[in-house]
Image (cartoon, rainbow, N blue to C red; front, top):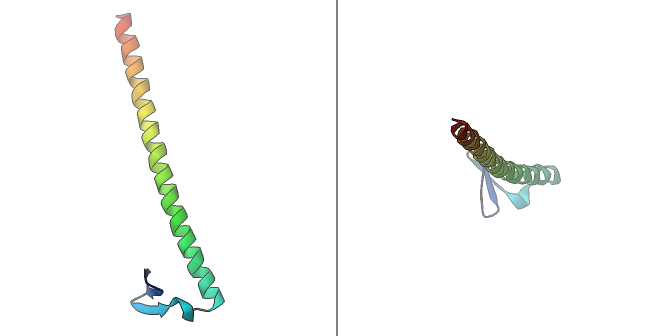
Length: 71
């Protein structure tokens, strides 16, 4: 589904937003909102994954430093 200035394309067919009935407009709005939410969640997941890797790396470095000090 793609959008171009008040026209949406579904299965290679164009539909004007103003021609949609109330249910269709509602579905379209839900698609827009869930696309945005999915994008936001992916961004948040990327941040969490990066932080997780950073802390794993810091723990590994800390343990290796402590191990080297004991030798």
